[in-house]
Length: 270
Image (spheres, rainbow, N blue to C red):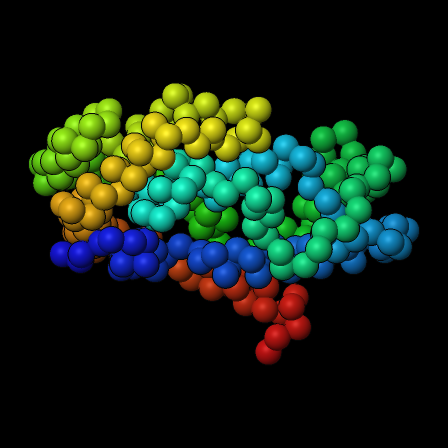
């Protein structure tokens, strides 16, 4: 069982070997954006940017995603908890700076980009995605099988006696530090008392109570190795599931490798 104090202390889980990595997703996005721009320029939009500006709402959602804690362990960043509670530093406005965004999509480009009358297949945005999945045997399975298995397993894991006992100990620890008792770390993160909403762009108000709660949350996990116990049970259950469904997991990996090969060709790599 690992001793987990920070997110970097979490070892890889069995199902992670059958998932796209963050780097995979970035490369896939880059390849698709390149193909989309090429398609749009062929349709007469010569100055179409590589990466159009995102709507303001999308930027807010991106920041909320960054603030979400490590699933299912909750926040593990003690310094961040002390300073920002369950939110993020207000000065952070962008998290994805692979290259600057270009201009917004113009009205006259909408049909070429997204398709006519809801028929997305005719749009440049969709044509790039289709090219990247050429040769993939089962796209739905490739994108959803592992996440669905993980969700099913986590429901079982949440009821495991070892996990329940670890969370009960964590909850007792919160009370001992003078903050509200929560059933799970996600309940603590999602408490409506933190005023997460439109007035903050999805961020919290980072009140003294919120910061004290988040700090106790992380300290208790460290004191009782809550995340370490939880990880060990997840590792056990996932390893057993991979052994039971080995052929399907390997089929998913094979399709992922086909997509990776397509991305590599689009990016001009050998």
